[in-house]
Every structure is written in structure tokens, then in C-alpha cells.
Image: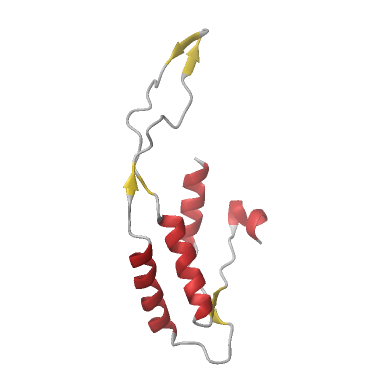
Length: 110
């Protein structure tokens, strides 16, 4: 659930890039180049957790293993590394992401 909140908050906020140097690279060129480099460095790699994400349920003291959980959901293991690489590359090109998180997570990031 917490992961979903982070993902939704990231999707809801559009990027707002501001130049942090006097002569930054053109924004579209910098974004394209950094995106290509990030994808080359950290390719999409889906993995499925080997263990259930949730603990077994207990009903009236009786343990019910993996009740209603179903299969584990695959996720991109390189997603955060790719985003971090992209943002670092953009800073090197003279741009800073000035997004401000609003709503539920604002108290954590602003």
C-alpha cells in the first residue's frame, strides 16, 4: 500500500526542470541523452519476489499460510537506480528537477 502511494504521487506530479547553471544543455536534448544513458546503464529487469510479501494470516489462532495472496507481483529491480542515474545526469547537464510533492507525502519531502 505504501509503495502504491509513492508510485501514485510520482505519477501525479509533472516534472519541472529549471536551469541551475548559466549555460545548461538544451532541455530536450539533455532529457533524451540522459534517458538513453540511464536505460543503457540500468535496463528494465523484472524480478519476482521468492517469498510472500505478507505474513501468514491467523484466524482463531490457526495459521493460514498465504491465504488470498496469490502469486507475487514482478517488479522492475532497476527502476530506482535508473531514475537516480537520470537525475544525476540532468544535474551534470545543468538542470535541476524542482518538483514539489503535494498531498499525503508533502510533509516528508517539502
